[in-house]
Amino acid sequence: MQHEFWRDAPAAPPTRYEPRSGEQFRRLWAADKGSFQDHLIRLDPESRHDRFGMGVADAFLANYAERCFGMDDVIYGFFADGVLRGAGELRGFGHGLPLAFGGAAEAAFSVEKDFRGRGVGTELMDRIVRAARNRRAGELYMTCLPHNTPMQRIARKFAAELQHETDQVDAAFKPTAASPASMWREIVEDSASFAIAMVDLQQRKWLKPAR
Image (cartoon, rainbow, N blue to C red):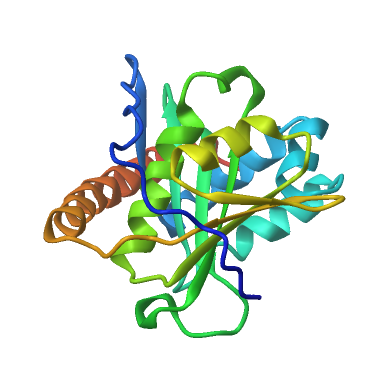
């Protein structure tokens, strides 16, 4: 799938989200698989339909979460009081080149209903676009349903060009080249997020009731 309908990057990046007390954005790791699964299962029917383009059952979401931490997968999460409430996903697109060799990538997002309309999706998108840049992705795509205007507005903030179809809207981005600053920022944040994920994993093990 090749699209040629992106625009140049905007002159100024979108306003960054300022986390409230008890909130944080960080990368998810394999140790966070349970939290990611729980987040997806908490999505209401409308949110599930928006995310996957159809109604899906809990079993589908559990199986999906199991497959989301591969080599070419990058997931960022939004946590409120230690609970994952939103996620942005980046993965290699189709069976083309790996991301590091200029392959295409696709992005997807899910934010629980009570945490929408606050800029969480924009902040997740910012991190996903940066991750695509740093992995030298040649193209970045996102698909949403026609009525999902909030995601379309977020895509436009990042200079995506939208193509409207009968049953979906395709957004295409051309990531700019990575800079030393963008790569260093991701390395530092990922190192901290990995340490936090390990601590969270140990806490969940300690709090897990004995059988």
